[in-house]
Length: 499
Image (cartoon, rainbow, N blue to C red):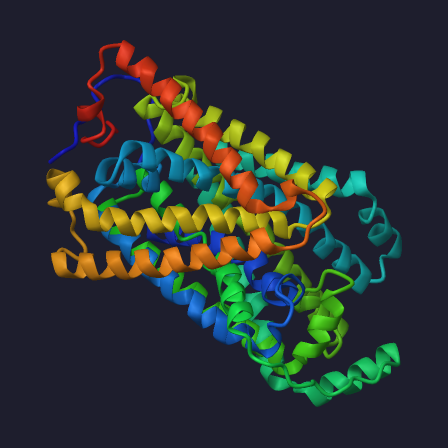
């Protein structure tokens, strides 16, 4: 074994997360904005995608599945907190491991703030559906919306601080409730059809719905949409970040990753198919040009008030579920960096009572709060999502490359792989994932740089590159400090951190 055992009395992370808690972490990180907002607002962000959203989603699933396989294989050999950083730093290159996970951390931290910010309109829509007009108007006030978003973030920072039991007791029931309420959308979407929708909108808004016109297929538009819909699969990696707290990690981590991506992928496809079955894509595209649209908002036309409120609550819960799972993920990345010494050591402190990285969680809450403010002043939450997609594509790409290089870079850890042991399988997954993810990254970057925006800082690529520069500065400064202490960095990055 390439690991050592922690022998001091210092508080440390405890392995308390079971398979259900791990799977819930991945599932809740993936569902939320990805299912209720992105498949419909994409009609504005990628104009011309029209009726091709579902095929684009299926294409986006291919690199996501390959990345999930890579994560599963690597997780079986390196079950530690900060999974993706540990995998690349030990199996590829320490600098690339840090820089990729730093961009991942930044992207996810910002998106936590984005999600918290867009939860409030869903709560507002619940109030509207219940005819609570005063409450709905209050939720439209800017400072109130920001305040609620910040309260949600810090509530879940606190729950995470309380440890695995508090985390699971919060997340798992909300996950099941989210699926139950989301199932209403699937059943209703396939029960009603577009004629029912046309009659309902004529009755409620006195608007005659025109038949959808044909939309010419465009490969560039299609690939750009697929690259953005790739964000729907981002989140299963949060399971890997919890590697230091998983029970029986060599088996539970790969299983939880596979369960999360299969369950979410199936649910996502059924959900989106159901909505587009009843709501014409042309209506979605037209509405998205002038306002934020969501699945519950569109289905409310054909559903009675009670069910409309239920699916709105389901959407709000799905978004809220993102927060505790993502906070766990980003805090464990910081914890892993600090354990290696490439981030301030104080970040690796563990709470005496709750055995959680309390300083890392607090700092993650601060960055997420900045994401809330950024969403408020930028006025377009897709900037945060674009930053996350760029960061995660790079991260997933390096996970696939690590699968190719680990046998040569770190033979002892390569021998610890317990899932997908055959080298030929590892190479097929690694090469296929690397090629496809690189292609998607090029498409996504080209779309971002060619987009017409008000200022350069609304291009997610430039923001990501600035973050990479900051991450590089931190890494080399800390690495120099480690070397001055006489630590052999070559050996440091060949072994797993002590538990």
